Amino acid sequence: MIRAALFSLFAAFALPVQAIEIQEVTSPKGIGAWLVQDDSIPFVAVEFQFRGGASMDAAGKRGAVNLMTALLEEGAGPRDATAFAQAVEDLGARLSFSAGDDTVNVSLRSLTETRDEAASLLAEALSQPRFDDAAIERVRAQVLAVIRSEANNPNALAAQELARQAWGEHPYGSSANGTAASVEALTRPDLVAAKNRVLARDRVVVGAAGDISAEELGLLIDKVLAGLPEQATAPLPDPVEPALTSGVTVIDWDSPQTVVSFAGPGIAIDDPDYFAAFLANHILGGGGFSSRLMEEIREKRGLTYGVGTGLSTGLYGQTWRGGMASANATVAEAVELIRAEWARMAEGVSEDELANAKTYLTGEYALRFDGNGRIASILAGMQLIGLPVDYIETRNDRVEAVTAEDVRRVAGELLDPDRLRFVLVGRPEGIEADDDLPLAAE
Image (cartoon, rainbow, N blue to C red):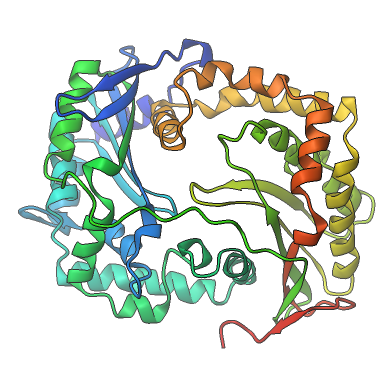
């Protein structure tokens, strides 16, 4: 349809970073939001992020928030799943819902002319979800299929075991999807309870970009959130430190290659030393073919197709993690190289390495703002983390301010070999494991 085609066109437009001016908005009912107004095209994107996300699952109900969130688009108010989907399509709008460890994300994308009607539909989805039996069983089956797939995916098995060791009984320690047993046991009342644990006005941050004024945004926010309770029914999770020790866990898996997942303690994105760690990560393993790990393990020795690291900056806990795969016969050598490079970062980086990392990381930043949808999501995420409103303007200055000594110091504090844990899924040769686990799918 014409509206859908226009939507795709308008969604592709982007503002240059220097043109991004953030307005701080407060709705008539007191909900705060950040807005980048752009009247050049008749399109708006609004992002609602609810703190807590899938970490708000009640005890024994793992997977409830994830299943509940997936059902929000499966009918609301007087409309069943089919009628609701048709109503959204008729407007040329998009409503999307997803649950992660830290947030439930709710997105609205609409042309200006249909914005109010799209907001009304979203309000119904949030406050009057039907949770019809047929929809529950259909979506439950989809989630169970994902769980079965993960149980036969060595990358998923490695990540899940590493999370379990890092976080234990904290929600971060298990999959947001839940287990087959926990998802099969969920009832409609469980889903209603999960909704009330996370979807509340005191948990939301809002970002918006596009053809909407501050006054119009305030009214739209109040319309969308009008039917939600003022407060959620459960407290947010407590912060947690990763309980990682050095060593290797091996999960038996019949394959000619071994999947490797590894992690150590991380750093919060609002920590004063975050950008030093950010640059250290790029040099160590986050910079693709320019990183030390890729140079040592792939380029020099051909032990893997790819190896990388990243800073996992959860709201309630952080790790510095990475992954790769290597042939069973060579994975032991690759693991030892990772350990060596992990420790070597404490010796410092060269000025050339630092300059190259800064050039890349400051240059690519503008590419993140590639449309109103991305901008709205970034604005909401900034508020969620607690970043200042001028962060977009000052972010590259913070990168440039990092010195080689900052990188050396922070790497020495965080990249502790005695807290670097490996989980291997395969049949690695020459590896001395302190944990040998049976096939997780058995």
